[in-house]
Image 1: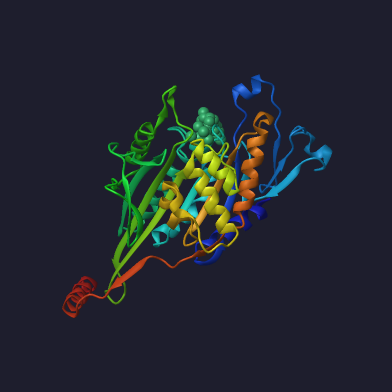
Image 2: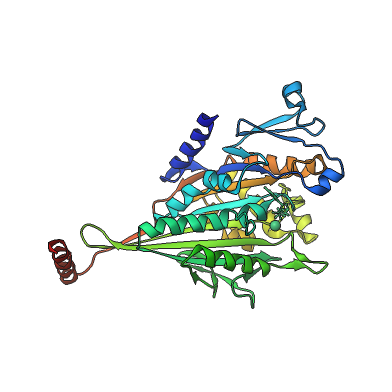
Length: 381
Ligand code: ADP
Ligand code: MG
């Protein structure tokens, strides 16, 4: 079993080096909840060998060995997490390598996909006692930066709801998306300079409170709200020839809206669903994924706010990780099946990870001499 885990990590190592790769896809099953138990539901998901997901609507989890895979379907992912997996295991297998890459000036993105109630927000944000990927990534980032003091971290946290973009760190008027030379940016978005994990944790919990809720269920985040945490890490230092080196990496951590009813792939269904005011951003995301899978030249990023914001996180120029969240209960079997199918398809997306976003600015000769002199004096002392 330890061998299997190693292959997963090895693969991840490869992904962040740059060059050709593919999206990494993970599945996480959450524990059966009280309601599901009360309704006497069966567990229809079995994780085998830490990688394979076995789905069977009519079998019981315990039938797995007995039936010997006869009646269900198998899917293989880069890793699959059973309901006993800890937040730490999920973070370190899916995201920790990306944090390292972002510090070196590369972009990365992690998104959670799945039906409402499947565990996306738990995986991404988590709770105060069991913080999720967003918080663990920042914590890890700060502990790594402590050893290397030339990094600056900025955070932005935003929401896409009904095709409006909202700043979760400073709620107010909707933000307008603009195209600049770095790509598509939300004008006026708060870029919060972060110094410590504790402060960030409070900030994110607060930001999450600002997510849109449905009028009928005031305490629950709307199932149609997407949240994106952008972590920008800037590195500025001098190389051995005293040139200024400037690197910027961006990590996007995304808690998507509930995927129910958003699996349509053909354009006619997509349009009729849009007419019915179903989540346009999520439909656009699946259209983009389909176009990427099919290797199409034109990827319809412009169709929604979410896909515009994720353009540089999906377009194959960055390391992309998808975590598909599912419920173990047969009551959600249809959704689970859809989510796993979609995740299986996402494995086909090829990425071409670009080089680090790095500028080397030669400094003027005079400054260089002076800088050298300072260094030499330091050495002598
Ligand atoms: P989603 O964001 O996909 O709608 P949530 O993350 O809010 O779903 O999860 C629904 C409920 O299940 C929450 O109360 C959450 O705390 C709980 N939950 C989800 N995943 C887990 C898990 N792995 N372990 C324990 N509780 C979980
Ligand atoms: Mg949620």
